[in-house]
Image (cartoon, rainbow, N blue to C red):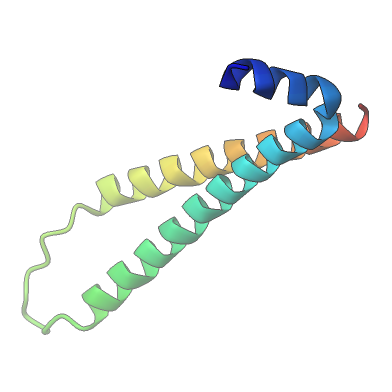
Amino acid sequence: MYPLQAAWMYYLAHPALVINSLALFFAVNGSWLWIATQLRGVLNAQRIATAPQGAELSTDDQATQRSNRLFYRVGAVALTLALLLSLISTQL
């Protein structure tokens, strides 16, 4: 039996479990993205705080803020998709 055929047969036998597993996958990815973005912001703030008084910091704050907003939005979409998939799996 081919692997895709076996996976399809498993899905037909347990659809709620497969969809809930997919929801868990999206939830883990979305939460990891939020946590990594938050830690990146904390580390960047610590680096700025420990810089010498007269030192020029070569950071592009607007680009950093835009990328952080993008990462937060993608994480929010992943978490929303996980919630919707979880709700769908309860109806099966």
